[in-house]
Every structure is written in C-alpha cells, then in structure tokens.
Length: 382
Ligand code: UD1
Ligand code: UDP
Image 1 (cartoon, rainbow, N blue to C red):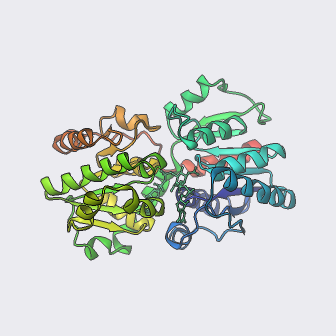
Image 2: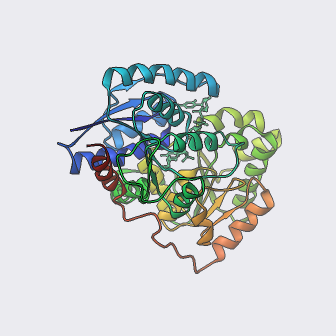
C-alpha cells in the first residue's frame, strides 16, 4: 500500500483534488491510501466546504486553519503545522497542486524531510516573478521528485530549466521524473459536466438565456489591489453590457468583494451596482460554475482555471492579465490576452464573438490524467 498525503488549501486545489481522490477510489482502493491535509488558506463555506460536499471529496484528515494573512505569516504557519503532521504520518510521498502558498509550504516542509514531492501542474510559467504564484511554482518544481505537466509547453519549460527527459529510477529530488500527462481539471470538467445542468438552478434563478451573457471572474492581486486596473476592468464590462445589451455574470471572489467599493471610482461603482444587466454573485459552486461556462457567450477572466474551462466548453476567452501560462489557448486563437486594458478588452470581445471558425483541439489529455498519475506514483514509489 502506498501512503500519500495530499495538501490543499485554495479553492482550485480543492476542486483538483476531487479528480485524484476519485481515481484512487475507482482504480486503486487497495493500493493507495490518501490522507488529505487542508491548510485552511480558503475557509468561507462557498470557497471550501461547498466543494467537498458537491464533488465527493473525502473530508480532510487534518485542517490547519491557517486562514488569511501576509505571505510570510500564512506560509510560515503552514510549514510548522505540516512538519508535525509529516513526522506523525510518515507518508511515502506528498501530493501538491499548482502554485499557491499552500503548494509552497507543502513542497518546503516535505522536501526538507526527504519525503518525495509530487507536483501536479508542474512547468507552468508566466515569466513574471512579480506574481507570487510564479515564485511558488518555480520553487515547488525544483524540489519535487515527480513532476506532472498538463501541457507540452509546461513540459518544455522544465526541459529549458535543466530537467532531464527519460531519467530512470529510483527517483528523488536530485533525480526527478518529468511527465506530460494532461490536465486533471479536464478530467473533472468532463466528469461533472454530465450532471451540472440537472443539479443546478442558477441560470433559471437569474433568468439567464443560453449564449446571452458574459461570464466574468476577477481575483488576481494586481487587478484587485490597483484601483486604476480594477476600474478599467469594470468599465470595460459595464460598457459592453450597455452597448451590446448583454448580461454580465460575475461570481465574485471574496478578495475582490472586499476591495470593489474602495478601489472603484465612485461614479463607476454606482453605475455597476445600478446596472440591471450586472449579476454580481457570491462565489458559486463548481457545478454552478460549469453550468455558467457551458451556457455563456464568452468568458472574461484573470483566473487560470477558468481560462481552461472556457476552452473545455468551447467558449472564447478574454484573459484579463498581462500574460498567461496557458499559452496554447492563445495559440489556438480561442483566447486573447488583453491585460486590464479597456480598449483591448472591448476589441477582443468584438473579435472573438464575430469569429465563426474557432477550433478547440484536444490538447489537455483524454480525461484520464488522474488515473495515469496514480499509476506513475505506484511505479515510482512502491
Ligand atoms: C490564492 C492564490 C492564487 C489563487 C487563488 C484561487 C496565493 C499566493 N494565491 O489567492 O494563486 O489563484 O487563491 O482562488 O496562494 N478571503 C476570504 N475568505 C476566504 C479566502 C480568502 O475572505 O475563504 C479573502 C481574505 O481577505 C484574504 C483574501 O481573500 O486576505 C486573499 O486570500 P488568499 O488566500 O491570500 O489569496 P487569493 O487571492 O485567494
Ligand atoms: N470556481 C468556482 N466558483 C466560482 C469561481 C470559480 O467553482 O465562483 C472554480 C472554477 O470553475 C475553477 C476554479 O474555481 O475550477 C478556479 O479557481 P480560481 O479562479 O479561484 O483560481 P485559479 O485557477 O486562478 O488559481
């Protein structure tokens, strides 16, 4: 039996963990024992608990209740608590997702104890260390033993950073194995897409018609914390809703909800709040999010996960950031990077909604990435 600990903390990691837990339950119940540690980085009911219930993720074995704070406060508290658990549980590997402070803390705590780190979503780069996530993911990759990249470009980034192709085991942080394996979120999107429409009622509640609304999300720190950028984003959405007479659905991350009134121009804030076509919602569940993604006209987002899900559901996407790690989306022509530039956002909307020839090739695997990762872990560590 392979004993692993999975560390999660932020919303997208909780959702990603559903795919691996499901693959273990379905394919390897007698071969892999998974314990789940929730750092508590996200803690609101609609940022955490909702996903465990809805996505059938086993209840966490530990919750560190770290909560919000500065990067140092948050990461340090996680490190101390994780070390204690790793000493007690002695897992054979530690599984991490993505690039949050929970990822960084997990990678540091385990690697210093010589516990192999398995990094899912390895190799992604924005090439901007102004992003806290870029620092987290580079550090996590370079102290990991098994690195699973969801895209070819991610895999190539690892090669460029000196990782070697075709290493033979035994694997360690000094002799890591890199694999291109597809995206566990594609597994999840396929799996849950089948039930999203039946199990949710959000579109009906808000009288949203198929193909007649913009789905937007905004939560990146450089967008929420800089008044000029946040105002430019909201101005673009407000202008589009008025000129195109289209609804805008905006499930709002708590970070943005807390800063919106403070950081938007007063006049703009009042205009947005008073615009009947704007549906500003608290964070929605994953099934509700899928229903919105399946039925919107276009996605506008600074989220990593939501960019990809737009692609899975064959919707064009405007990326509200200066760059993206998911470069394949832009190369396919289904997504345009506009940053927080009002003029570029409106132009990208025009271009993407008038294009009839958008093609969404299968570049994120076959929907079985999580089962593949389980098999690789068993081969490497048992
Ligand atoms: C974090 C990740 C980011 C990821 C995002 C997913 C880091 C550095 N950033 O950003 O990569 O894209 O999660 O959503 O790890 N808050 C609440 N309730 C919650 C959680 C957060 O109110 O349940 C508020 C708090 O005011 C907190 C702020 O949101 O200070 C930011 O939360 P934090 O986890 O620090 O970063 P995110 O912006 O969520
Ligand atoms: N998501 C959700 N409800 C929401 C907004 C997002 O379930 O209100 C899901 C979304 O479908 C995706 C993940 O959360 O799977 C993305 O998380 P987020 O945008 O917070 O972080 P990122 O992917 O940018 O790290």
